[in-house]
Image 1 (spheres, rainbow over the protein chains, first blue to last red):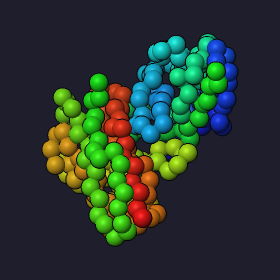
Image 2 (image 1 turned 90 degrees about the vertical axis):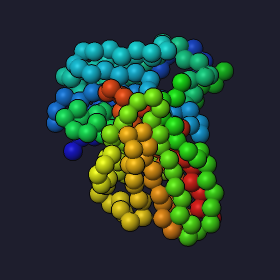
Image 3 (image 1 turned 45 degrees about the horizontal axis):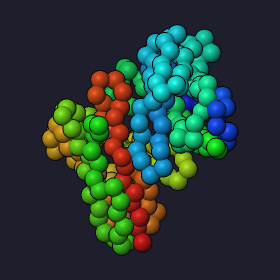
Length: 113
Length: 113
């Protein structure tokens, strides 16, 4: 079945550092790819998405590019802030089906001032 | 603003009690909604797909009689945890698709004493 593998956490960085959170996937079709963010005690918020190969999703300074050749969707940000501290989930959606999401295990990110 | 409302956000109750969680889509209709469960510091696991006007589709290993799902209208799905026990304590999150991305409720933290 489809699966998503994320970089193991937790990740701790200093403010203004460069961030990369790796995400790779396996899927039989052509999935859409997403990054969701979860702040403490809250539900998930969509951070960005990409629906086809070479698409770049971006939002709030975060970016991720849909790489079909490497089956990856790595999340990057050039300069992180304390407010970026959260858990980040990479996910895919098989558009052939009922739009179920398959999530990676999540990466907890802590940014120190 | 929120497009999916989940209620209650926090429940504490005694073992043996049944607990109902509501998930509402705001300003849009959702023939399908999804229920996820999240254990502490872990990823989201899909429990079931809620289908308006028909039976829910449960994922493998999820007890249908324990987790009752009713999709009563195009904007409301409910999850009832029947005869809850401490091992049912968890964070439950619903989602509904609006276009391609899923929109999530803020989750319900269920604690069974």
